[in-house]
Length: 185
Image (cartoon, rainbow, N blue to C red; front, side, top):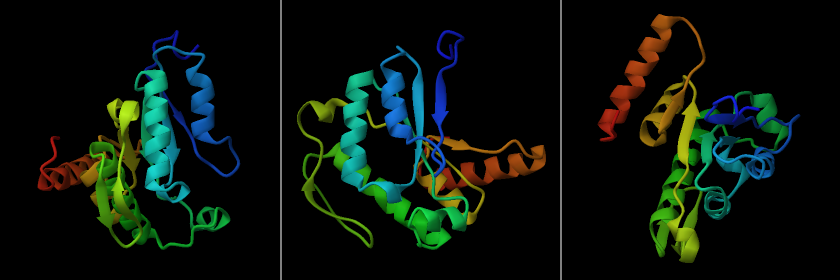
């Protein structure tokens, strides 16, 4: 019904009380032809290689209908429930490194990296998977760490419908940060 009524995509929410979004998106992709699936996940959930391999496989199977919504937790209580005790700002640091590795794997057959959270030696997509498109990347958040992460990596920066002046200021701030990274606004 969503696709028939002209929607372009649907957000697959990731919450401890809900279904696992990547699995649900895979099941629903078989029932649709053009609908995109925005899978919300935390970099904590997968290694960069797992995320790359799963996403490239999904992209090949669906004609590039996967979009990533990178989340870094909203509640410290939920973070502890799922076993992630990394402090708020450090989660964004980890997510930044995660996406550096993801993009390295995606764009090279022999990517090497050594960081605080991840290491890789000569890894990368090969064969048919190398032809898949990197999913578009969404993120959200209003903290300094979230804004910086979004400016550096996000194709789309998601925001809550709040007061127009607050939203305008958030947009201007993230836009200015993205420009400092040389990213098109």
